Every structure is written in structure tokens, then in C-alpha cells.
Length: 306
Image 1 (cartoon, rainbow, N blue to C red):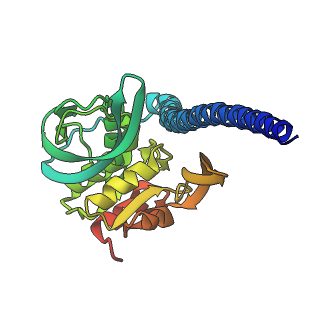
Image 2: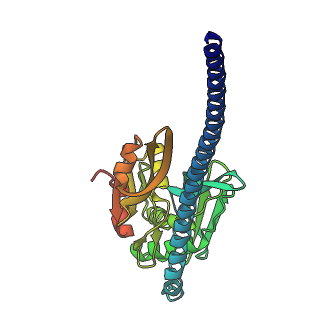
């Protein structure tokens, strides 16, 4: 009888061992599959974050291109019919300097590009000549400023009332290194202000920065990359950053993390924020002001604290 119980217990122990072994094996397989699945999910989340960032950069590039297309389209007809001053007058001489803010393309690899603000120097020199507008870039910066320079000259002439038919205007754009700037028209407002200063003999504050296109009637038009340019101006020691009226508020992307169990999901959400608040969040202290035209903007450069 005892032997029979012993045999039954032995069989039960063996069966229990086998069941436990099978269970443990199943758990090991499930754990491995779960680890593999979790790794796949994490990889997908990383890919999604990179993809979202790429979309963000593409949207910024589209914004820059759209602003340039709108600018050139709006200027074409006006510039063709702009009245020309032909009366003879004495040649003017003068010099001025202003900082330009632009956006440059930074290529991380062949498939990924980032956009950053960059500061360029702009020197204006007036010489006796025949009314030419000459643009020189040192070194190569990847943009054509000739159209903006012609309009800037026309606006400066109209505002000052001075005949420039016997004066050559030499515009020299200086960068610390060769770079790929992507938004030429946005330098129009700054160049106009610098030409006016050279004509009038005014000194321009180097603590004031501006971005914006210029129209033949002197109004300042919208541009892309305002947030990136504002950061560059703040880093360069700027105290006032002038933007086209209406662009004091910017659209940007804010990183948002959400946890689902052990997994962290990262998304980039589109938000609107005051440009000045945006800069303060990044640790910069710089005033942002919207301006409608060149005359309004010029006052900030000659009397920045008034």
C-alpha cells in the first residue's frame, strides 16, 4: 500500500516538475517576445520622433520659400513702374554699417537639414559714380541680394529726397565663414535703413536688429524664420529685435512627452507664443517690437531707448 502511494507521489512530482518546466519555458519565450516587441516599439518611437523633426524642418523651409515667392511677386509690378529721378545733382559720399539677421541651412547628413539664425555684417559706402548699386558678399553666402538692394535704394532715395543718379552705392555683406543663407529678401529693410543712414550721416545702434522685406512704398513685409533670427540677435547682444507688424507672435513646435506604462511617447505639438516670451523661455532678454514701415523702424536705430 505504502509503495503504491510512493509511486503515485513520484508520478505527481514528476508531472509537477514537467508542468513547471513547461510554464517556465513558456514564460521565457513570452519574456523574450515581449522584450523584442518593446525594442521594436522603442525603435518606432525614435523613428517617429526623427520623422516629426524632419517634418518640422520641412515646414520651416516651406515658410521661408513662401515668403520669398510672395515678396518677389508683389514687387515685380511695382518695381517695373517705379518712377526714376533723372535730374542731375552732386554726388554723395557717406558710410554706415548695420547687422543683418538671416537663416542658414545646416546639413547634418545628406538626408537631414536644420535651420539656424546667423548674423551678417552689412557695410554701405556712397561714392561718386553713375547711380549703380553694387553688391559684394565676403565670402559666398548663397543668396542674390541685387533685387532687394535695388528696391532698398529706391526707397531710401524717396524717403530722403536725395538724387542718387551721380552716386554709386556699394553694399558689402560680410559673414564669418562661407554659409548657405536661404532668405535674401528679408535683408531688404535693414539695407534700406543702412542706405538712409549713409545718406544722412546718422550712426545706427548695433544693439538693434531687424528682419523684414521692403516694398517700394516703404512698408515692411513678413518673412520666415523669425524665431531663429531672434535667437541669433539675442546671442549677438541685441537689446531690441524689430519684426514686421503681426509677427510678434510665432508658431513653433513644443516637445511633449507622455508615458504609457514603461514606454515614453514623444510628440511635437504646434503652438503659438509671443516671440518675446519664447525668447525668455530660452534664457534671452531682448525686447521685440513690430514695425510697419521704414520710417518707424529707423527711429529705433537712431534713438533705441526713446
